[in-house]
Length: 252
Image (cartoon, rainbow, N blue to C red; front, side, top):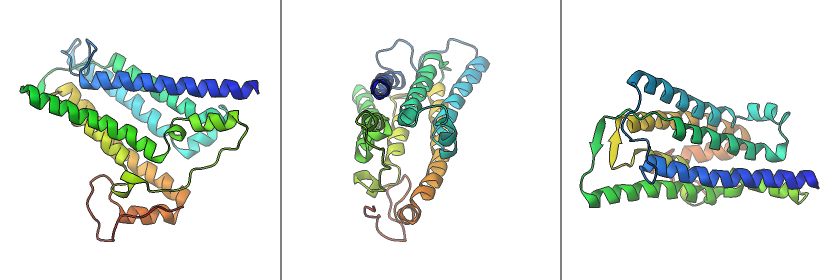
């Protein structure tokens, strides 16, 4: 029982750390609260800034992609207990994001800036909407499974973990990846776009487009024809109808 309680406390701590990390990222990317943010004036030579930022983005991309692959999970769970595997992924994701926010080197240079206060507030609203889309989408599927709390709670209660069935809730009837639509929105919606911010937005958007291919390959391997039919009928990111037909309905 002590092991189960420890696993639950570990998972809960990782989740609370995620909430704090999300708050840090919201302020860092939105130029809020903190004195040093993504659009701050440069503090280091351009070459060094590009080198550091590239390394930070690489760490972020590798952590999110490699640790999410089934082959890695099979190896990883030989070292990490299965009930806390997802919580450990969340922990490392938190650390990668916090490292990026802490060590990011602003580059300076203005790509665009919105001077009108009302328009700036509106753009900040779009940025916040992007975050709301990300959070809301996680609840549309299973927020607590995604962040590891369901796994450690079932383990605490002595119940076996069961794979969530394939479903197409709410926004997933419109596009296959509404979570990524939210991320792309908040990456680009900014009243002031510096070269530093542009580098971040381009790199993370490119990463998302690559990550989708890897994720969908895994989903097809897991759900087979259910996901292939869904993929044929529902667009990836842009909500337009496809020639094949209407968006797919929920599939068990």
